[in-house]
Image 1: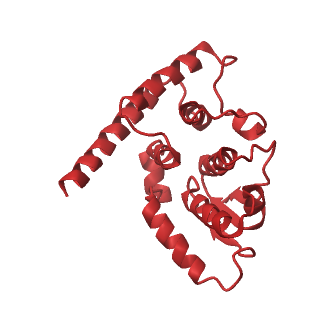
Image 2: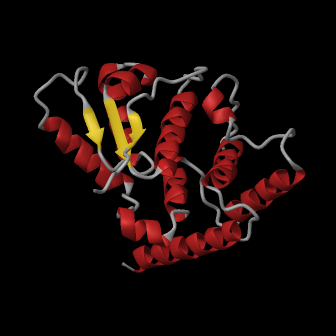
Length: 215
């Protein structure tokens, strides 16, 4: 229990420091924040994005402004100071960190740990009446895509299908926040790239924003 409390405290401190750093940036636009996070992830994992046009839009490189390059260096140093492996779980958690408190209240956005996602996905698949190759699974409040990623991994493990095909044939994601849809696409595409599928484009046509109209 003491170790669990210590881990929670460390995460709380890390979240606070990351938020404080990001709030100190000139731009608070979601895409600028996402560029910083994605570039830090790519740099930390030595990923070479050669083909994918979507992810290239979120990469800070030598052609970016001096300020962006400086911010990336500082952000990487901040992350390194916590001695945390910048894996996909930490990427998901970081996306959750930067959701504004007001959005969390309105949208009900919360981080779901991997062990819970795995449990829910596993039991959902047990209740499926179709072959796993043919299932259509939807997350109607997908956030940054953690559940869809867990499901995609499960389908890949059991069928051997390429992620590009899984994303096209099996996954549906909806959210009312545009930045959530963007982050879901970032997560899914980065995972495919890290598994050898650096495609120029991905058919994520079923990951869409829900538009609400009140009358």
